[in-house]
Amino acid sequence: MSSLACTMSNQVKVKICGLSDPEDVAYAADAGADYLGFVFFPKSPRNVAAGRVRDLVGAAGQAITVALLVNPNDQDIETVLTGAPFGMIQLHGSESPERVREIRETFSVPVMKALGIKDRTDLDAIVEHSEAADQLLVDAKAVPGAMLPGGSGVRFDWQLIRDCNWKLPWMLAGGLNPGNVAAALRETGARQVDVSTGVETAPGRKDQARIGEFINAAKGR
Image 1 (cartoon, helix red, strand yellow):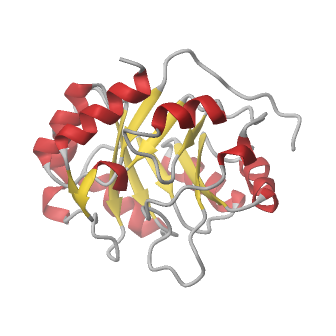
Image 2 (image 1 turned 120 degrees about the horizontal axis):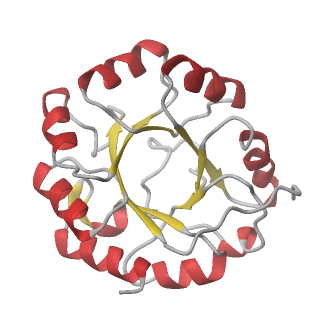
């Protein structure tokens, strides 16, 4: 592991990802979500239709809006950022540190890089991206041949990152739900968490009650 110091804060921050209904967006914002994520990946059941982007982002209140893209080219990013004012870009593909740095410099928008974890050999990528991104999202690694790079509802072994020492703000994802998020925070030391599948009744269909329960559990209410 690197000698980078782990960034911590007292208040747990929550990201609700994969939102596609303005009412769910408004509910999550009112319930205390700090980040709201919107997926721009056609293969995902959570993919946002172009005509709904402004309505969705407009319902976000004070929460930071995050546009999730997978291996985007510059035109893909330009199209998304032109469609609505996003506060952050999340890269959820195989983007290299060099590409992450290039996107930050080209678009002047903070970038969160998602990295899949299966075993300790995957931790080196976190250190490599720490000098390029503004934040990191640590997720379960997609299985070979998977259609989606994330949003599977599968968790990884939290013990792998229990003694993190990363200087960058980072977010825990992968298999979280209202019932296990408190334990995940205790076991990993994470101060930011991301959920999508864990607050759904079906792929792409968010449940407002579960959203509220997750936020309350994460924030210890």
